[in-house]
Length: 77
Image (cartoon, rainbow, N blue to C red; front, side, top):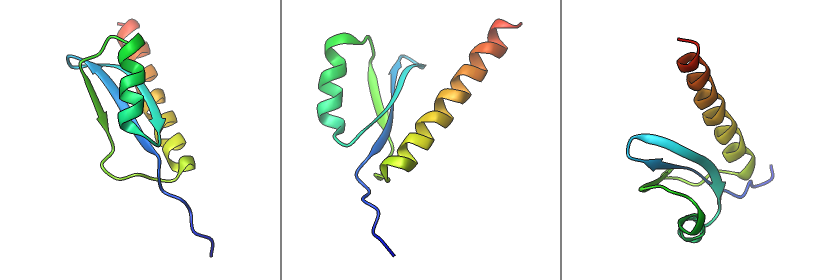
């Protein structure tokens, strides 16, 4: 059985209580500094444990789908 490298985090950027961005990275500190240059946010929250890149992409897609669903439900009211 092949070993799967687990070095990728899924993260969210927040402005107050509002999520403004979701992404994945293998270096949260570097990514935080990169986002600080071009995004308006207060907090970066990332998963405590790194996962494989494919699992991180799945988590990112799931979070984006939930976010979009929430937006469409909010806009339909």
